Image 1 (cartoon, rainbow, N blue to C red):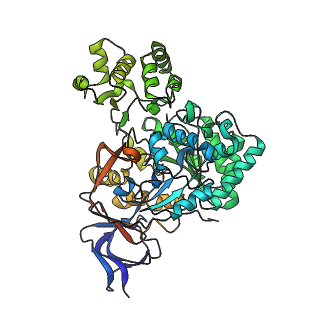
Image 2 (cartoon, helix red, strand yellow):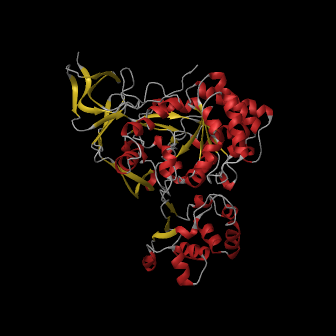
Image 3 (spheres, one colour):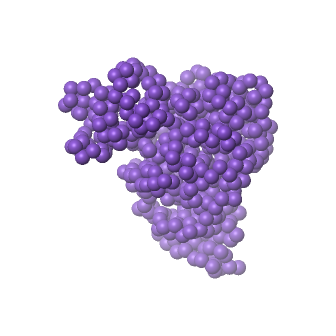
Length: 552
């Protein structure tokens, strides 16, 4: 028989963790038809001699909920061999949404995920109101890769409670309504639901992100939806400081009990991971899955979009305000005094002692580029806050500061711990600050080839079959007959991420975002169609919506 596509002479790493082997891979009707020595012909033949043939990577933690409406290739994840993304994480998203709440939903994304408001205003189509309508709109929208959705709790609370969702817990009748909406979302194919109680997650007008105010009774009620339907997963952003408390333990325990399904949470940090993972071991045995990042974060800070400092009370005075108001506040000694007082709070924020000036716009300030903030403060006889804000105001809030790269010390033992899941790419989010969406190529180029932390077979499994199984993405994540033909073909000696992040202006209205680019990927195939050849798009848009299925 003749196949649609035949990949010949490659080295197959099939996603199961089994040793690599030489084989051909035949594809027909969007699925893997045969793996082995294949003599039949095909409409298209790819010679993969000397290359690795693996399942397309599955990224379980992204925030492309808005971006898919203006970026059909879902970049920059797809540049790195990702063929399926899961979005709607951390309890924030744009569905369900009544017309009167669209601005609030957008500001939630601005403050939590660092996506500029003007970009969202120009780019979101709003072809839906309910979550099932959102899923169906995505299914009708041409995309290059596959997309799956978690139902994010914040817009569900907005939908039922209005602006009171940012002030209080839900009442019994509201819980009943929200639970039914989540039930309908998962029944329509959502892969589960997500929420956040992270203190730095502030939404519209600097008020708490609505999901943070959900009571335990609420969360347990919503978790029980998954038990009723026999499908789905819960994703929970517990905190971003890495301090795992007894309350966190009890909350996850309650969700695991109520749902009977996997519960994945973040974050676990290098500095205390051995203690944390030992503490959560009983939860892990019951389906608890801590997420970890494979890429050291380099954060960019621009005070015109101060989401990095959103957890500090002083910044409520500037969040979502016009530029002139922000400059006035930053220059105000009262704001600065409150900022200083806030530094004693144990919340996630950039460390001023680690910051340096990366880029300025005013010519007279150019000599400061590359200098640590500590050096500038010392030279000017100022403390760090005055040095930071004086420079930002003088530069019209256009100065870009960077937080020095996170150390990799200890990351090896955290990543290789069998109790963790590789995730946290945040693809589509924090476009004004940083980008970790290139983690699949970094995993292989850095952690496998350079550091030899994993075998290639194990690394591929961690980014394909494992997330597919955890999130119930049936029929993907392995190169075996009958599975969807999502394939990445790469040169093991060349694959990597270009770690130096850079900005490109390709967002709606010319907005800028930070990206990571890839090297060493020869072909990316989605549902049997080639979407990239040597990093160049072919124009094919064969992506599908992946939907939850009953698992018991």
